[in-house]
Amino acid sequence: MPLPEFDKIQQNKNAVPEWAKYLKDGEFISYSVTYKTKIYFDLFDQYTSPEGMTYYVYDPVKHGADPGKKYPALMWLHGTSNALDGVKCIMCCGAEQYATPKYQQEMGGAYLIVPLAFEKRHADGNISGSWGDDNYDYFPILKGVFDAVCENCKQNMGKKFIMGASSGGFMTWKMLEKYVNYFDGAMPIASGYVPDDKALDKISESGVNLLIAHGKHDEMAVFDKCIAPREEKLRSMKNTLCFFPEWVYNGDGGVSSIDYGMEMGQHCMINWVQHNLMFDDGKPADERLPRGVTGWIRDVSGLE
Image (cartoon, rainbow, N blue to C red; front, side, top):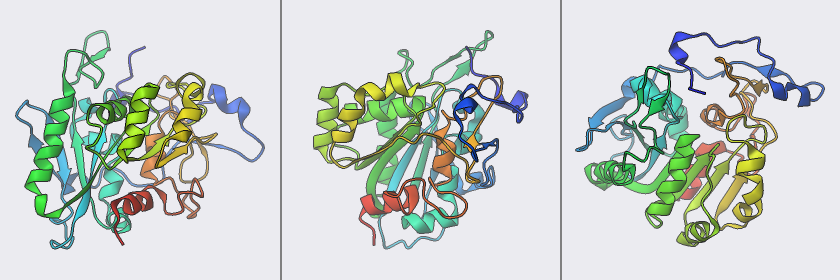
């Protein structure tokens, strides 16, 4: 089924998802995030790689961070169809909230990198050019983008992270496989792909810190098919935190529903990641992440 054109249709905020029958007494469906969006795009500068890939960069030093310190760089990989949204992909991929003053302070400052795949929507509604498209060798392009940012900001460059949801989660794993010793931290989210045991062993031994996130009611990357058969292996990896919640929530504490003709609220954990895996009342989604994703990034970065 082709993904809908989200800007041309309205979200169904009266949807009753198939998974609603599993909700317990007191649990409710939430149809909207509680953070503000589409207001931080101008904090990102636009660039073009030698291969013609558009990418956006948030530079913490340019926006007031101490020029005498080093900061981690976070590459955010979008899901299928999000590149078609242009600059709005900064929101869709998860990066926008991490450019806010609050999150920047919590992380101790961070570079944010948002590359756009060469996506095209065809007359039949199908999309080509996404991260898994065999017609494109995205590996050297993405690494080249990361290398370019590191070189341009080398005096302030710290640890390197890569993260992404859905097909962006797929590509996060693939980049970890391809460049085993390049990244210091990674966050594959709602990925339908998990590397084989041999690749996971190499990733584990590389020393990279992993935060793997996947909801148990994911409508698209079904947990019982994508994660459950590999769960024991994933949990055994070094420096790895597996966040596999029963439900994906919004900040208001409601179970997330997003329906634009197809339900994907539990697949879009990236929205909860933009909530920093925290609820609006300050409660963390997981007690192992008492300061959310921003705290995890700061800890892995070694910042005081």
